[in-house]
Amino acid sequence: KVLLNLQTKRYKKSNPDAKHTIAEDVVCSIIDDASSQFLRLDELSGRYNPMSRESALACIKNCLDATTEGEKRQFRSAEVKKLMDRRRKKAVMEKIERRKGIGNSIICSTSTPTT
Image (spheres, rainbow, N blue to C red):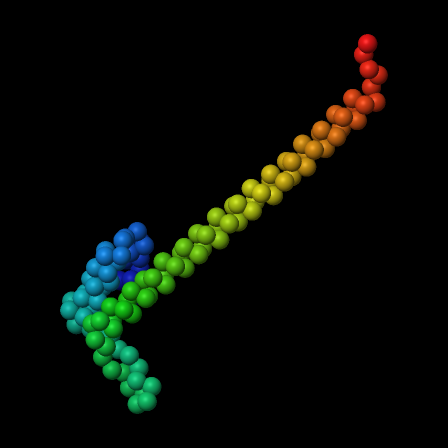
C-alpha cells in the first residue's frame, strides 16, 4: 500500500508507456527487492496460491488506475460545483439587473416629458 501511495502522483501524470514502467517497478520492488509474493485466493481449495508477474502487474495497474480515477472524479465534481455556483450568481445578477431596468422604465414613464 505504501509503495502504491508513493507512486500515485507520478502515475497519474504519466503517459501509458510510463505507467506500464511504473507498475513494473512496483512489482519488481515487491517480488525481487522485498522477496515477497503476490497471492490469489483459490476459492475451491481455500488456499492462497502465488500469482505470475503478469497477473501481479495487471493487479497493480488496476489498483493505480482505480486510485487515480477516484481523484479525477473528485476533481470533476468540485469543478461542476464551482460551475453551478457561478451560474447561480449570474442568474441572481441578471434578476437584479432586470429589476433595475424595470425600476428605471417606471420612473421614466411617470415623469413628465420635457419639451
